[in-house]
Image 1 (cartoon, one colour):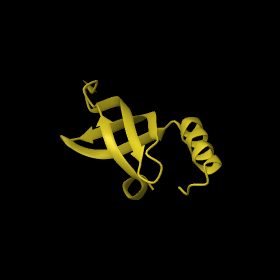
Image 2 (tube, one colour; image 1 turned 180 degrees about the horizontal axis):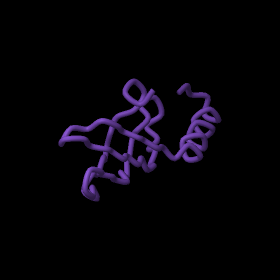
Image 3 (spheres, rainbow, N blue to C red; image 1 turned 60 degrees about the horizontal axis):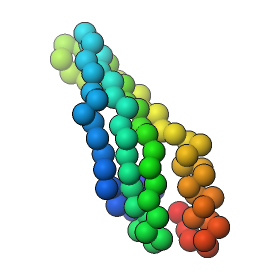
Image 4 (cartoon, rainbow, N blue to C red; image 1 turned 90 degrees about the vertical axis):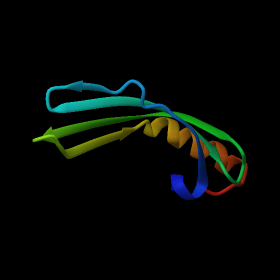
Length: 81
């Protein structure tokens, strides 16, 4: 959905932290909905697990409440997501 319908305006991974065989980051993201030019600001959280220096697991979390609110706003304008 994001790649087709949105332009990425900001994706900040500067808060990345490492601890032994793990890494994590909360990523503030700002997208622009191509059809309506409305911006969506949200946060994505990524957590990696490493074995022998290689990533073996990624858990990604999105602010689903914020995304639902945005979808409702766009739908109220008659646009599609």
